[in-house]
Image (cartoon, rainbow, N blue to C red):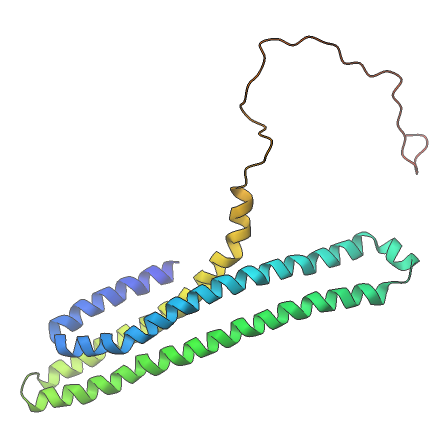
Length: 216
């Protein structure tokens, strides 16, 4: 989160300096970055959704392993090791397929972002040369603009990578938030309580012993 905030603040400061140097070149830069922002919006939603599914499948995978190891005597008694192994492989394969889709989406997003972000430098160089020929901007200003633009692009790439990670964390924490905010149907706090209660509860001749420990 600290990297996200730092990169975001650096991008804002860079845009202020870029507008100060040349508003025309800055608008051209924004025009090249807007497609990345639009794609990042849909990419973030996809990452959040698929991470939720991955967490659910991982929970199922863990449940299968927990049930098998918890009842290992029954598994051995009925010789169902292969069936339990098959169950685990099935759920684990689903997790792998979802992780593959997640990694593929990240690869496509990284390519798309780098193509447009670094492609904007080519546009700026061409447009800057055109403005310099017309006398609207000096060569030193173009150099300064490109240096600030490099810092902007580097932090923009960091921001896009961290953004995907943050959306994954949000997707993974959805289930935890649901548990924390869950309200049971039967409320155990508050409610109406009588001033006094009448009656007697008795337990008589109650005995208990463990099947494997007759003397306890």
